[in-house]
Length: 120
Image (cartoon, rainbow, N blue to C red; front, side):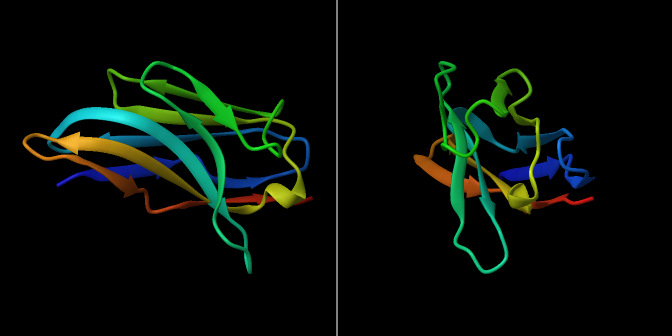
């Protein structure tokens, strides 16, 4: 069984920073792409950023220049450093990982979500 455990969400004032973490565990053979999505109330889930196992990154326009995605392959962990946070960044943030378990093909897995609230 594969588990994704997220941490790092919370309440922050506008202009503040947060760092999200998502650790994958279980019978993991190989991890491919890791990413972060978010879903605000009444809105659809949207992509925030992704990172390949080679370190290539991609960002939504709303995240460019403010957010940085990174990963630690030894720890099977992906991070999202969020700076200059705005009230419109308020959402539940989900990590998403494409990986293969031993003897199985690639599948996508989702974390449980962590709430980020930006408010004064």
